[in-house]
Length: 413
View 1 (cartoon, rainbow, N blue to C red):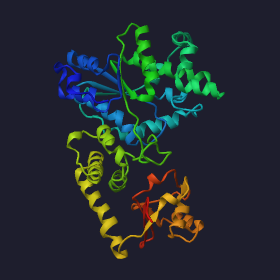
View 2 (spheres, one colour):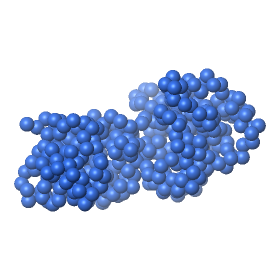
View 3 (cartoon, helix red, strand yellow):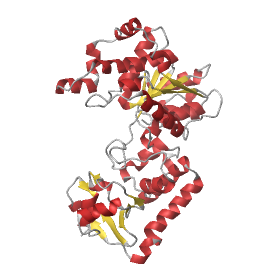
View 4 (spheres, rainbow, N blue to C red):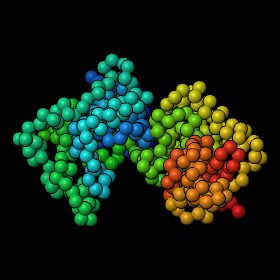
Protein backbone atom coordinates (compact mmCIF):
# COMPACT_ATOMS: atom_id res chain seq x y z
CA UNK A 1 0.00 0.00 0.00
CA UNK A 2 1.46 3.34 -0.95
CA UNK A 3 -0.47 6.53 -0.33
CA UNK A 4 0.15 9.81 -2.09
CA UNK A 5 0.70 12.91 -0.01
CA UNK A 6 -2.87 13.92 -0.77
CA UNK A 7 -4.23 10.69 0.69
CA UNK A 8 -3.58 11.80 4.26
CA UNK A 9 -4.57 15.22 5.53
CA UNK A 10 -1.63 17.64 5.89
CA UNK A 11 -2.48 17.68 9.61
CA UNK A 12 -0.98 14.19 9.81
CA UNK A 13 2.15 14.76 7.77
CA UNK A 14 4.50 14.10 10.64
CA UNK A 15 7.27 12.03 8.96
CA UNK A 16 7.09 9.21 11.50
CA UNK A 17 3.30 8.96 11.22
CA UNK A 18 3.54 9.00 7.44
CA UNK A 19 6.10 6.18 7.56
CA UNK A 20 3.90 4.10 9.85
CA UNK A 21 0.71 4.36 7.80
CA UNK A 22 2.13 4.49 4.30
CA UNK A 23 5.23 2.37 3.75
CA UNK A 24 5.04 -1.40 3.65
CA UNK A 25 1.40 -1.59 4.71
CA UNK A 26 -1.13 -3.98 3.21
CA UNK A 27 -4.27 -2.85 5.07
CA UNK A 28 -5.34 -0.72 8.04
CA UNK A 29 -8.77 -1.17 9.52
CA UNK A 30 -11.12 0.30 10.42
CA UNK A 31 -10.97 3.53 8.47
CA UNK A 32 -7.74 3.04 6.55
CA UNK A 33 -4.51 5.01 6.82
CA UNK A 34 -6.19 8.37 7.46
CA UNK A 35 -8.05 7.07 10.53
CA UNK A 36 -4.93 5.60 12.14
CA UNK A 37 -2.90 8.70 11.24
CA UNK A 38 -5.49 10.85 13.02
CA UNK A 39 -5.41 8.59 16.07
CA UNK A 40 -1.62 8.82 16.20
CA UNK A 41 -1.61 12.59 15.71
CA UNK A 42 -4.18 13.20 18.45
CA UNK A 43 -2.93 10.63 20.96
CA UNK A 44 -2.56 12.12 24.44
CA UNK A 45 -0.54 9.14 25.64
CA UNK A 46 1.75 6.51 24.10
CA UNK A 47 -0.36 3.92 22.30
CA UNK A 48 0.00 0.25 23.15
CA UNK A 49 0.99 -1.58 19.97
CA UNK A 50 0.80 -5.35 20.10
CA UNK A 51 2.62 -7.94 18.02
CA UNK A 52 1.89 -11.51 18.99
CA UNK A 53 4.31 -14.23 17.94
CA UNK A 54 4.08 -17.95 18.54
CA UNK A 55 7.63 -19.27 19.00
CA UNK A 56 7.14 -22.28 16.75
CA UNK A 57 10.65 -22.06 15.27
CA UNK A 58 14.06 -21.01 16.64
CA UNK A 59 15.35 -19.11 13.59
CA UNK A 60 14.01 -15.92 12.05
CA UNK A 61 14.46 -14.74 8.47
CA UNK A 62 13.84 -11.51 6.57
CA UNK A 63 10.17 -12.41 6.14
CA UNK A 64 9.71 -12.18 9.91
CA UNK A 65 11.53 -8.85 10.00
CA UNK A 66 8.85 -7.02 7.97
CA UNK A 67 6.37 -6.80 10.85
CA UNK A 68 9.15 -6.30 13.41
CA UNK A 69 10.32 -3.25 11.44
CA UNK A 70 6.78 -1.86 11.53
CA UNK A 71 6.70 -2.35 15.30
CA UNK A 72 10.03 -0.51 15.56
CA UNK A 73 8.52 2.44 13.65
CA UNK A 74 5.86 2.76 16.36
CA UNK A 75 8.62 2.71 18.99
CA UNK A 76 10.52 5.46 17.17
CA UNK A 77 7.32 7.54 17.16
CA UNK A 78 7.18 7.28 20.96
CA UNK A 79 4.67 4.46 21.42
CA UNK A 80 4.91 1.29 23.50
CA UNK A 81 5.71 -1.90 21.62
CA UNK A 82 4.29 -5.04 23.19
CA UNK A 83 6.10 -8.13 21.96
CA UNK A 84 3.79 -10.91 23.04
CA UNK A 85 5.29 -14.38 23.26
CA UNK A 86 2.46 -16.82 22.63
CA UNK A 87 3.81 -19.48 24.92
CA UNK A 88 0.26 -20.68 25.68
CA UNK A 89 -1.20 -20.34 22.17
CA UNK A 90 1.84 -22.14 20.71
CA UNK A 91 0.68 -25.19 22.66
CA UNK A 92 -2.55 -25.01 20.64
CA UNK A 93 -1.00 -24.17 17.27
CA UNK A 94 -2.07 -21.44 14.84
CA UNK A 95 -4.20 -23.07 12.11
CA UNK A 96 -3.73 -20.09 9.77
CA UNK A 97 -2.41 -21.16 6.38
CA UNK A 98 -2.34 -24.81 7.34
CA UNK A 99 -3.81 -27.68 5.32
CA UNK A 100 -3.88 -29.83 8.44
CA UNK A 101 -3.55 -29.41 12.19
CA UNK A 102 -0.17 -28.13 13.38
CA UNK A 103 1.94 -30.41 15.59
CA UNK A 104 1.60 -29.25 19.18
CA UNK A 105 4.84 -28.11 20.80
CA UNK A 106 6.07 -28.99 24.26
CA UNK A 107 6.59 -26.24 26.85
CA UNK A 108 10.36 -26.83 26.67
CA UNK A 109 10.38 -26.36 22.88
CA UNK A 110 8.33 -23.19 23.18
CA UNK A 111 10.64 -21.70 25.80
CA UNK A 112 13.81 -22.43 23.84
CA UNK A 113 12.32 -20.99 20.66
CA UNK A 114 11.19 -17.90 22.57
CA UNK A 115 14.70 -17.33 23.89
CA UNK A 116 16.29 -17.36 20.44
CA UNK A 117 13.41 -15.31 18.98
CA UNK A 118 14.02 -12.51 21.47
CA UNK A 119 17.76 -12.55 20.77
CA UNK A 120 17.11 -12.11 17.04
CA UNK A 121 14.31 -9.57 17.50
CA UNK A 122 16.87 -7.45 19.32
CA UNK A 123 18.51 -6.80 15.96
CA UNK A 124 15.44 -4.73 15.00
CA UNK A 125 13.52 -3.59 18.08
CA UNK A 126 14.64 -1.05 20.67
CA UNK A 127 15.24 -3.07 23.81
CA UNK A 128 17.17 -0.26 25.53
CA UNK A 129 14.95 2.85 25.81
CA UNK A 130 12.96 2.65 29.06
CA UNK A 131 9.21 2.39 28.63
CA UNK A 132 9.29 1.60 24.91
CA UNK A 133 9.03 -2.21 25.05
CA UNK A 134 7.05 -4.75 27.00
CA UNK A 135 7.81 -8.43 26.56
CA UNK A 136 4.87 -10.48 27.79
CA UNK A 137 3.76 -14.11 27.67
CA UNK A 138 0.11 -14.96 27.19
CA UNK A 139 0.30 -17.80 29.69
CA UNK A 140 0.08 -14.96 32.26
CA UNK A 141 -3.69 -14.79 31.69
CA UNK A 142 -4.69 -17.68 29.42
CA UNK A 143 -3.38 -20.35 31.77
CA UNK A 144 -5.60 -18.87 34.50
CA UNK A 145 -8.87 -18.93 32.57
CA UNK A 146 -11.47 -21.02 34.36
CA UNK A 147 -13.72 -23.44 32.49
CA UNK A 148 -16.69 -21.10 32.93
CA UNK A 149 -14.65 -18.19 31.52
CA UNK A 150 -13.56 -20.33 28.59
CA UNK A 151 -17.16 -21.28 27.86
CA UNK A 152 -18.15 -17.60 27.99
CA UNK A 153 -15.32 -16.81 25.58
CA UNK A 154 -16.41 -19.54 23.15
CA UNK A 155 -19.95 -18.18 23.25
CA UNK A 156 -18.74 -15.04 21.46
CA UNK A 157 -18.36 -16.81 18.12
CA UNK A 158 -20.45 -19.27 16.14
CA UNK A 159 -19.32 -22.38 14.30
CA UNK A 160 -20.44 -20.68 11.10
CA UNK A 161 -18.12 -17.76 11.77
CA UNK A 162 -15.24 -20.13 12.42
CA UNK A 163 -15.90 -22.08 9.23
CA UNK A 164 -15.88 -18.80 7.32
CA UNK A 165 -12.17 -18.64 8.10
CA UNK A 166 -10.58 -19.63 4.82
CA UNK A 167 -8.26 -22.32 6.18
CA UNK A 168 -11.04 -24.07 8.09
CA UNK A 169 -13.45 -23.84 5.16
CA UNK A 170 -10.99 -25.42 2.74
CA UNK A 171 -10.12 -28.23 5.10
CA UNK A 172 -13.76 -28.90 5.94
CA UNK A 173 -14.76 -29.04 2.28
CA UNK A 174 -11.81 -31.33 1.50
CA UNK A 175 -12.76 -33.69 4.31
CA UNK A 176 -9.56 -32.92 6.24
CA UNK A 177 -10.14 -33.05 10.00
CA UNK A 178 -10.66 -29.76 11.81
CA UNK A 179 -10.15 -30.26 15.53
CA UNK A 180 -12.08 -28.45 18.25
CA UNK A 181 -8.95 -27.13 19.94
CA UNK A 182 -8.08 -25.29 16.70
CA UNK A 183 -11.30 -23.26 17.03
CA UNK A 184 -9.88 -21.94 20.29
CA UNK A 185 -6.86 -20.34 18.66
CA UNK A 186 -8.46 -17.17 17.20
CA UNK A 187 -10.39 -16.64 20.42
CA UNK A 188 -7.32 -17.00 22.60
CA UNK A 189 -5.25 -14.72 20.39
CA UNK A 190 -8.08 -12.20 20.37
CA UNK A 191 -8.35 -12.38 24.15
CA UNK A 192 -4.70 -11.31 24.32
CA UNK A 193 -5.78 -7.91 23.00
CA UNK A 194 -8.30 -7.67 25.83
CA UNK A 195 -5.72 -8.62 28.47
CA UNK A 196 -3.21 -6.11 27.13
CA UNK A 197 -5.71 -3.32 26.34
CA UNK A 198 -4.08 -3.00 22.93
CA UNK A 199 -4.65 0.15 20.89
CA UNK A 200 -3.11 -1.28 17.72
CA UNK A 201 -2.32 -4.83 16.65
CA UNK A 202 0.11 -5.80 13.89
CA UNK A 203 0.23 -8.95 11.80
CA UNK A 204 0.72 -10.39 8.36
CA UNK A 205 -2.09 -10.41 5.83
CA UNK A 206 -2.80 -14.02 6.78
CA UNK A 207 -3.72 -12.87 10.31
CA UNK A 208 -6.70 -10.69 9.36
CA UNK A 209 -9.31 -13.03 10.87
CA UNK A 210 -7.42 -13.29 14.17
CA UNK A 211 -6.88 -9.53 14.41
CA UNK A 212 -10.57 -8.84 13.79
CA UNK A 213 -11.45 -11.35 16.51
CA UNK A 214 -9.40 -9.26 18.92
CA UNK A 215 -11.48 -6.19 18.04
CA UNK A 216 -14.73 -8.10 18.58
CA UNK A 217 -13.64 -9.35 21.98
CA UNK A 218 -12.54 -5.88 23.08
CA UNK A 219 -16.00 -4.56 22.19
CA UNK A 220 -17.52 -7.45 24.16
CA UNK A 221 -15.45 -6.42 27.18
CA UNK A 222 -16.30 -2.73 26.82
CA UNK A 223 -12.89 -1.62 25.61
CA UNK A 224 -12.11 0.74 22.75
CA UNK A 225 -11.40 -1.66 19.88
CA UNK A 226 -7.91 -1.74 18.48
CA UNK A 227 -6.76 -0.63 15.07
CA UNK A 228 -5.42 -3.50 12.97
CA UNK A 229 -2.48 -3.04 10.62
CA UNK A 230 -1.35 -5.83 8.32
CA UNK A 231 1.89 -6.06 6.37
CA UNK A 232 2.53 -8.07 3.20
CA UNK A 233 4.04 -11.53 3.28
CA UNK A 234 7.53 -11.39 1.79
CA UNK A 235 8.33 -13.57 -1.20
CA UNK A 236 11.50 -15.60 -0.97
CA UNK A 237 14.61 -15.72 -3.14
CA UNK A 238 12.87 -18.03 -5.64
CA UNK A 239 10.76 -15.03 -6.58
CA UNK A 240 7.24 -16.27 -5.97
CA UNK A 241 6.76 -18.46 -2.86
CA UNK A 242 6.52 -17.00 0.65
CA UNK A 243 9.94 -16.87 2.28
CA UNK A 244 10.42 -20.03 4.28
CA UNK A 245 13.33 -22.04 5.60
CA UNK A 246 11.59 -25.25 4.52
CA UNK A 247 11.54 -23.96 0.92
CA UNK A 248 15.22 -22.97 1.08
CA UNK A 249 14.38 -19.51 -0.28
CA UNK A 250 15.22 -17.52 2.83
CA UNK A 251 17.81 -15.12 4.24
CA UNK A 252 18.32 -15.74 7.96
CA UNK A 253 18.75 -12.83 10.37
CA UNK A 254 21.78 -14.51 11.95
CA UNK A 255 23.54 -15.53 8.75
CA UNK A 256 27.10 -14.29 8.35
CA UNK A 257 27.65 -11.14 6.26
CA UNK A 258 29.09 -12.92 3.20
CA UNK A 259 26.28 -15.47 3.03
CA UNK A 260 23.66 -12.75 3.47
CA UNK A 261 25.29 -10.55 0.83
CA UNK A 262 25.69 -13.41 -1.66
CA UNK A 263 22.02 -14.29 -1.39
CA UNK A 264 20.68 -10.75 -1.54
CA UNK A 265 22.68 -9.59 -4.55
CA UNK A 266 20.76 -12.19 -6.56
CA UNK A 267 17.22 -11.22 -5.53
CA UNK A 268 15.07 -11.47 -8.70
CA UNK A 269 14.75 -8.11 -10.46
CA UNK A 270 10.98 -7.94 -10.06
CA UNK A 271 11.30 -8.20 -6.26
CA UNK A 272 14.16 -5.79 -5.61
CA UNK A 273 11.96 -2.70 -5.11
CA UNK A 274 9.58 -4.70 -2.91
CA UNK A 275 12.51 -5.77 -0.72
CA UNK A 276 13.64 -2.16 -0.45
CA UNK A 277 10.12 -1.05 0.53
CA UNK A 278 9.50 -3.73 3.15
CA UNK A 279 12.99 -4.24 4.56
CA UNK A 280 14.73 -0.85 4.42
CA UNK A 281 14.16 2.88 4.84
CA UNK A 282 15.87 3.79 1.57
CA UNK A 283 13.66 6.25 -0.39
CA UNK A 284 12.35 4.38 -3.40
CA UNK A 285 12.79 7.48 -5.55
CA UNK A 286 16.55 7.29 -4.94
CA UNK A 287 17.13 3.74 -6.17
CA UNK A 288 19.64 3.31 -8.99
CA UNK A 289 18.16 2.84 -12.43
CA UNK A 290 20.53 -0.01 -13.30
CA UNK A 291 19.02 -3.33 -12.07
CA UNK A 292 22.39 -4.78 -11.12
CA UNK A 293 23.30 -1.73 -9.05
CA UNK A 294 19.95 -2.01 -7.28
CA UNK A 295 20.73 -5.59 -6.29
CA UNK A 296 24.15 -4.59 -4.97
CA UNK A 297 22.74 -1.66 -3.01
CA UNK A 298 20.06 -3.92 -1.52
CA UNK A 299 22.63 -6.48 -0.41
CA UNK A 300 24.91 -3.86 1.14
CA UNK A 301 22.03 -2.05 2.85
CA UNK A 302 20.65 -5.14 4.54
CA UNK A 303 24.04 -6.53 5.58
CA UNK A 304 24.77 -3.11 7.12
CA UNK A 305 21.43 -3.20 8.98
CA UNK A 306 21.96 -6.62 10.51
CA UNK A 307 25.74 -6.47 10.94
CA UNK A 308 27.53 -3.17 10.22
CA UNK A 309 28.49 -0.92 7.31
CA UNK A 310 32.07 -2.22 7.58
CA UNK A 311 30.83 -5.81 7.38
CA UNK A 312 28.79 -4.92 4.31
CA UNK A 313 31.81 -3.43 2.54
CA UNK A 314 33.94 -6.45 3.42
CA UNK A 315 31.24 -8.84 2.24
CA UNK A 316 31.04 -7.04 -1.10
CA UNK A 317 34.83 -7.15 -1.55
CA UNK A 318 34.98 -10.83 -0.64
CA UNK A 319 32.10 -11.73 -2.96
CA UNK A 320 33.69 -9.88 -5.85
CA UNK A 321 37.04 -11.50 -5.18
CA UNK A 322 35.45 -14.92 -5.01
CA UNK A 323 33.55 -14.52 -8.25
CA UNK A 324 35.90 -12.38 -10.31
CA UNK A 325 39.40 -12.18 -8.92
CA UNK A 326 40.23 -14.99 -6.53
CA UNK A 327 39.93 -18.65 -7.35
CA UNK A 328 38.27 -17.94 -10.69
CA UNK A 329 41.28 -15.99 -11.97
CA UNK A 330 43.18 -19.27 -12.31
CA UNK A 331 40.54 -20.77 -14.58
CA UNK A 332 40.15 -17.90 -17.05
CA UNK A 333 36.53 -17.46 -18.13
CA UNK A 334 34.09 -19.61 -16.20
CA UNK A 335 32.35 -22.29 -18.30
CA UNK A 336 28.59 -21.91 -18.40
CA UNK A 337 25.92 -24.56 -18.02
CA UNK A 338 22.38 -24.10 -19.33
CA UNK A 339 19.97 -24.92 -16.53
CA UNK A 340 16.74 -24.36 -18.45
CA UNK A 341 17.17 -27.70 -20.19
CA UNK A 342 16.88 -29.61 -16.91
CA UNK A 343 13.69 -31.14 -15.55
CA UNK A 344 12.46 -29.58 -12.31
CA UNK A 345 12.46 -30.08 -9.42
CA UNK A 346 16.17 -30.90 -9.90
CA UNK A 347 18.50 -32.23 -7.22
CA UNK A 348 21.87 -30.57 -6.88
CA UNK A 349 23.57 -33.93 -7.25
CA UNK A 350 21.87 -34.30 -10.66
CA UNK A 351 22.96 -30.78 -11.70
CA UNK A 352 26.55 -31.56 -10.69
CA UNK A 353 26.50 -34.65 -12.88
CA UNK A 354 24.79 -33.03 -15.87
CA UNK A 355 27.12 -30.04 -15.78
CA UNK A 356 30.18 -32.27 -15.88
CA UNK A 357 31.47 -31.20 -12.49
CA UNK A 358 31.00 -34.76 -11.23
CA UNK A 359 31.06 -38.04 -13.13
CA UNK A 360 27.94 -39.42 -11.42
CA UNK A 361 25.22 -38.49 -8.98
CA UNK A 362 26.84 -40.79 -6.43
CA UNK A 363 30.12 -38.92 -6.75
CA UNK A 364 28.21 -35.65 -6.44
CA UNK A 365 26.67 -36.78 -3.17
CA UNK A 366 30.12 -37.76 -1.86
CA UNK A 367 31.53 -34.37 -2.81
CA UNK A 368 28.65 -32.59 -1.07
CA UNK A 369 29.01 -34.70 2.05
CA UNK A 370 32.75 -34.05 2.01
CA UNK A 371 32.25 -30.28 2.00
CA UNK A 372 33.73 -29.75 -1.47
CA UNK A 373 30.67 -28.21 -3.13
CA UNK A 374 29.87 -24.50 -2.96
CA UNK A 375 27.13 -22.38 -4.49
CA UNK A 376 28.17 -18.74 -4.80
CA UNK A 377 30.94 -19.46 -2.33
CA UNK A 378 28.59 -20.88 0.31
CA UNK A 379 29.26 -24.47 1.28
CA UNK A 380 26.39 -26.84 0.52
CA UNK A 381 25.86 -29.52 3.15
CA UNK A 382 22.59 -31.20 2.16
CA UNK A 383 23.12 -34.00 -0.41
CA UNK A 384 19.37 -34.05 -1.09
CA UNK A 385 19.09 -30.31 -1.81
CA UNK A 386 16.83 -29.66 -4.79
CA UNK A 387 15.57 -26.65 -6.69
CA UNK A 388 12.01 -26.17 -7.86
CA UNK A 389 12.72 -23.81 -10.76
CA UNK A 390 15.60 -22.61 -12.91
CA UNK A 391 15.06 -19.08 -11.55
CA UNK A 392 16.50 -20.21 -8.22
CA UNK A 393 19.83 -20.95 -9.91
CA UNK A 394 20.19 -18.45 -12.74
CA UNK A 395 23.39 -16.40 -12.51
CA UNK A 396 24.89 -18.40 -9.66
CA UNK A 397 28.30 -20.11 -9.67
CA UNK A 398 28.59 -23.80 -8.79
CA UNK A 399 31.96 -24.97 -7.56
CA UNK A 400 33.55 -28.36 -6.76
CA UNK A 401 36.91 -28.25 -5.06
CA UNK A 402 39.24 -25.31 -5.77
CA UNK A 403 39.36 -25.24 -9.57
CA UNK A 404 36.14 -26.66 -11.06
CA UNK A 405 33.38 -24.12 -11.74
CA UNK A 406 30.20 -23.65 -13.75
CA UNK A 407 28.19 -20.47 -14.12
CA UNK A 408 24.52 -21.50 -14.19
CA UNK A 409 22.60 -19.61 -16.84
CA UNK A 410 19.29 -19.67 -18.64
CA UNK A 411 19.13 -19.59 -22.42
CA UNK A 412 22.74 -20.56 -23.13
CA UNK A 413 23.58 -22.40 -26.35
